[in-house]
Every structure is written in C-alpha cells, then in structure tokens.
Amino acid sequence: MSVKSQLLKDRLPRHVAIIMDGNGRWAKKRGNMRIFGHRNGVKAVRAVTEASAELGIDYLTLYAFSTENWSRPKSEVDALMSLLVSTISDETKTLMKNNVQLRTIGNVETLPQDVRDKLQTCIIQTSNNTGLTLVLALSYSSRWEISKAVKGIAADVKAGKVAIEQINDDLFVSYLETKNIPDPELLIRTSGELRISNFLLWQIAYSELYFSDVLWPDFGKEDFYHALLDFQKRERRFGKTSDQLILNK
Ligand code: FPP
Image 1: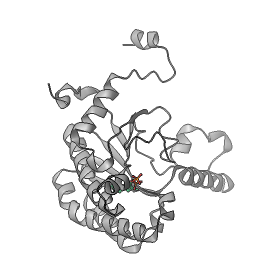
Image 2 (image 1 turned 90 degrees about the vertical axis):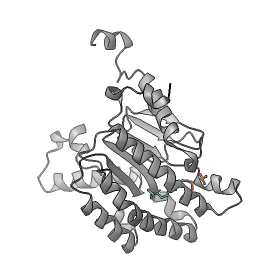
Image 3 (image 1 turned 180 degrees about the horizontal axis):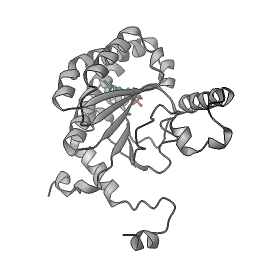
Image 4 (image 1 turned 135 degrees about the vertical axis):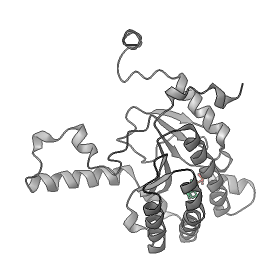
C-alpha cells in the first residue's frame, strides 16, 4: 500500500510549515558550489507545493530566506535573490494552473527592488486563486515579527485605539505577519538539524514537529507523505489528558 493511500483525507493538517535545510551540504557532497544546492532545492519546493495542492492542504509556509541569512557571503545572497526572481517568473503559470495563491511574510522591504516587483506581480496575479495558499517567509525572523507586533500594539495603546486590558492572544495574533492564517499543525525541518532557527515561534506553540534526515534538494513527495502520515499517528492533546480526548470523541 502506498504511503499516500494511507493518508486520511479528513485528518490532514490545514497548515504545514517547512524549514528547508541542507542545500549547501547537498551541493558540497557533489563537489559543487552552494548555489547549485539552492537551484536543486527549487525542485523540492515544486514537489511539496504540488503535493499540498493535490491533497487539499490550505496553507504551506516555506522558510526561504531568514533575517540571519543576510549575513551569508554577498555572492550567495545575490545568487539566492536571482534564483527567487527567476523561480517566481517561471512558476507563476503553474501556480495559476494549480489554483495556488502566493503570499509573503517577513521584512520584504529589505529585499532588492526586482525581487519585490516580481513578488508583487505574482501576488496580484494569483490573488483570486482559491486553493492552496503558498506563504514564502522572506527576510523573516520570528523575533523581528514579535518585536514589530509589540511596537504596533504599543503605538495603538499610545494613540488610544487599544486599551491595555484588551491585550490577549487574539489581539496579539492580529499584529503578526501571519494574521488570518491558522497556526501550522505540522512543522517539518529537513537535513537532520534539530532546531527551530527563529521560525514562527509564536505560531508553533502546539505544532507537531517532524525532523527528516533528507537534505532539502532530495526531499520529494514521498518524504512529504511520510511526514503527514507520521503527523496523523500523533495524539494532539493541547494540554489535556488522553482520557479526556477519548471521552470527547
Ligand atoms: C537552507 O539550506 C536553505 C536556504 C537558506 C534557502 C532555501 C532556498 C531555496 C530552496 C530556493 C529558493 C526558494 C524558493 C521558494 C523559490 P542551507 O544553505 O542552510 O544548507 P546547509 O545547512 O547544508 O548549508
């Protein structure tokens, strides 16, 4: 029986987030430059996007470029930015065909103008698509997002728009980059690293974590199905006991 056919349609996560890791090591193992790994990583991006759209998952968030990634050598940053531009241009047609909407989270104003222009065009073009929402985290870090939310709330308190007593989880969420996006039920990280690396720290409070040893360029649909199947075997208790969950069924 294939892994895909074992998946229960009614128990799929609505939102999957992925830390795509291992491109550099994948390239190094082949005696190539790191950008060769990033270029091959695009194939994996295509595979998980297609699989998510086919399965009917609502949101897929990919950590494509972190705030900390700006500290990489300029040549690698420049190559990654060019790759983003060419990938968005090449893939817009496929996103349209698969009814996928593109969104971004992160400090996109810090991205080069040509990247922002391409993103904006693709976001507008795909804005009426009703299937999967593909969220690219670009120049993103969770601490930046949380600080920004705190500044936004503080400014609104100062302006008399928000009372301190109104500050709760729901209000906080409305100041995050991910407002109107449900929290991911599943977070996947590839390449065997067991870290969260400043990604969606608020949003993953109750996410199931799945770590794969596969390097990102090798991560294919089958690996994605394995992660989903593993997720479906987990008992999500949200602080309750197993007995309470059985009684509430
Ligand atoms: C991490 O691997 C990967 C990145 C920092 C970039 C991810 C980018 C892509 C997959 C290509 C473009 C993406 C889109 C959405 C078009 P690493 O470089 O940290 O690998 P290492 O840990 O082996 O060095």
